[in-house]
Image (cartoon, rainbow, N blue to C red; front, side, top):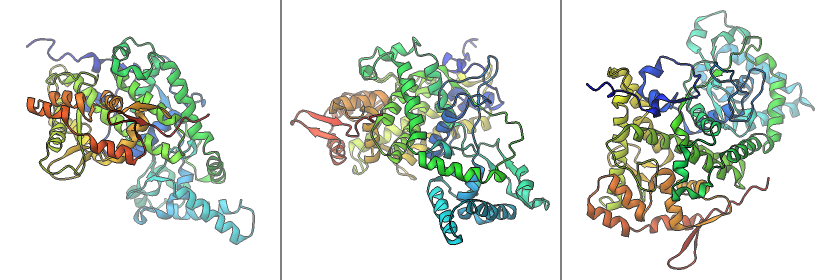
Length: 537
C-alpha cells in the first residue's frame, strides 16, 4: 500500500490556533478531526449565536483584557482561553419560578425566596410597590429567555441581546444533590454546579468565533486571493479584511452594550444585590479553553464576516438584527459542514462560480408532487447527505492507516450529516421534518435573510446578480446558469440541464415582491433592494 495513501491533507493538518489543547476526541471523532472542536448536533440556533457572542464579548485574559474582540491574547506556548461570566444569580431570579418543578432543589427554593427579599429591600416605595416592581423585573428578564425547553433553571439560555445576558453553561447535578442530606442551603449546594459540561453550549459558537479569529489573524493570507480573483466575488471588496474586522468589532460591541444600556443597568442592579447567590468567586478561575479550526476555513469565514457586516450595519431593531444573526450562524454551520467535507471528498466535480464546489437546489415549498424542480431539490439533498456521509469515512481521517472504530464513526455521523439534517430542518431549509421526499426549499424568512446578508444595507443589485451571489456564497441554485451548474454537479441528465436554463423563478420573484425587496424596472430588468438602510452610527 502506498505510504502516502493515508497522509492527512493540509486542510486537516494545519490548525488554528497552533497552541490548542489536544483531547482524546481530537483523535477518535472524525467530525472533530475534519471540522475542528466542534460542531454538536444538539446545539440550537439560538445557542450557536449566544456562544459566539459570549466568546467575542468575554475577556481573553484573566486580567479582563480582550473584551469585545476577535484577537486571541494567549501567551506563546499556551492554548488560548476566555473568561466568561456564568450569570447564575440573574438566572435564579428570572428563571427559577418557571423551571421544571422536579428539578427545583429545596435549597434553591429557599435561596430564591431570599433573593426576592434581597432585591425587594433595595426598591424604594411601600411593600406593595416593592412587590410589583420585583414582579415586573422578573417578567422582563424571563421574557428574554432564548432556550428553556424541559431544562432546569440554571441551564436556560438568555436571548443574547446584551453583554449582561451572555452566560457560560452551568449544569446542576440534581440527583447527586438530593442524595446528600447536608445540602440544605445555597452555600452547601454550590458543589453540585458543574461548569465544565458542554451539553447545550457545545462549542459550536466557539468554533464560529475561531473561524473569524483565524481570518482576521492573517488578513493578507495569499490563499484568499484565489477567492478575490474570481469575478463572482468582486462585491466583497478585495483585501480589506482588517477594515472588516474593525467594523465588525465596533458594531457588535455597540449592539451588545450601547443599544440596550437600560437593560444592562437593570441586570447589574439585580446582580449587585444578589452577590450571595453567585458561585464562589474565591475559587481560582482558569477560564474556558478554546478549541481549533482548520486554517483553510478562512475562505468560508470571509463570506461569513462579509454577511455579518451587512446585517450589523443595517438600520434594524435589536431583535430583528438578532434574528438574522441567529440564522446566519446556523447557515454558516451548514456551509462549513459542506465546504470541508468537499475538500476531502474527491468523488465530485467542481462548480464554476462557487468556491465551495457543491450545490443546493431549492424548490418552492408548495411545488406539486412529481414536478421536475421538486425532484431536483430532493436529489440535491440526497447528494449532500451522501457527501457528508462519505466525508466521515474518508481515508484521510484514519490514524496511521488504521480505520476508525464503529462507535467513533457513529459520533462523527451525529455531528456531520445527521447534524446537517437536523439544523437545516430547524431553519426551514429542508422539509419535511420526517418521512420521505426530503428536499431543499426556500421560505420567505430565508429569502429575507439572503437579502439582508448578500445585499449591503440601502443598496440595490440586479435580480440576476442576486441569484449569482446566492450561488457564490452558499451554493444555492435559484435558476439560470447556477441551476445548470448545480444539475451538472448532481449528475443530472442533459435534458434536465436544458430545463434548468428555462426554469421559472416566478415563485422566488413573487416572494421577493411580497417582502418588499423587488423593484421591477421593465419586463426584462428587476432589481433586488435591501430597504433596511445603513445604521448611521
